[in-house]
Image (tube, rainbow over all chains, first blue to last red; front, side):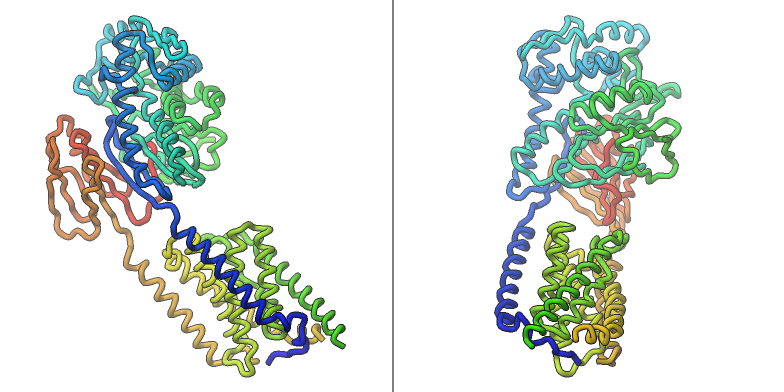
Length: 346
Length: 171
Length: 123
């Protein structure tokens, strides 16, 4: 029962035609949007072993299915030709052997950045830690507890100031040798990001042994590992477009005479760091830095780390040995603890 | 005589339009409920479109629907516009079909529910196309349908209550 | 026009039935636990652990040799020829997100469940 008082309306003449015309436009517009969305980015997942760790990559790309293989190749190349200290074919290996070498711009930049972090961390973080890390050999066949004398002798060889970078010519002192173990994974993430940009991937989330690259305009939910080592998350945080690295005492360690020795060595003492932390997770816009800073902060402890993080515009989540958690201001509101044996402290 | 009618007509559509857009805006201020897809709203503005569909021209009803969509686009973005238009067009089409026949098989509540359900179906299909997966249908479907039933019930009832006043107004 | 007609009740019933129909898939799925075994970067096995009734083991055909055992809602390295045996020592994987890897054999076992509270873990 409708009342057609006003049915002799303005629109009556164009009524049917306009409805049809409009519907046609609507259908076409719909079709275009649907077409674009269904031929949207395809997701591919891969996980493999390289650089002594597990690498997983999830990439969404519209038209580049070979990107996974490219990343795989890049990682293998990086290890063999740049980062590894165990082979002569790599630049680091060559540099350690000859103490003076002409290197790639990449390595020159890495060493300059690491030197900077060493300075800012007052030597707690130092890539010339190789003599000491070789003694401990965490994860290797000769893993052991070195004697005090051995450590003292090796400690004297640690000196980041001896790294001299002039353009692409690098010299290190005769006693020094480089170990990029603390930054390798983060740096690899930087390289992968460059590849993703080249291929114009839509979004991606890459894990190089726990160092993460978040790429694209999409918020991923990141779990922070429970330091008990069960590979479950004790908390989560939503982030996008950044690098995340964690240093913890649960990844590589051994126990001897009731004491636990973990692999994050303090370059000032030659022994595993004890800043009362179980792990530090650093978030920033450089893979190399996120890795270096997580190591540095773990070694230096909470209070000393804050200025360091501010300087590099990085945020961090600290998990203490007593299961309390502290966050820097930028992430304090975003980090959610999901395991209630951990307590957030302001 | 015609001029007077046309003036009334413009005034009426203007008022209905303002009502529809205003209600739609107020509803958009409601924060997203957990468990509901973002953007799910009671749809009170449908009262205006249903009235126009029943008592004025088809084009008038669609005009307001598109207006709502554009308003959503300006204030809440492109996605919101698509959602509003897809749901609104389907819902208004149903209203035209159901409310303009001589004899209606459904009561106000039935029409309200059908229009609300169609509104949500339109939006759900759009959401699925935008996100590239049909799983949303199973995820949000049941909840949206129940929600539509309730809001359809309410809008249908309100329309019945308000119909005499609106008719008087349009005279 | 009336407020409520017989057909309106039909409409309501139809919508409710549609709801129930759409809810059926969510009852079937529950919490599936899916394990992926990757050998040398190639996803070789995908196993739905919640549908496993009898436990079984298989060899990954790698050097060093590694044997994986699959049980209902659990998967683990039961034997490996590698020097450090980290994979075997990881024990049973039973929860979403857990992984075990035999690096020398280049075998990675990881678990994903239908629902997970994070995309990737940083460790």
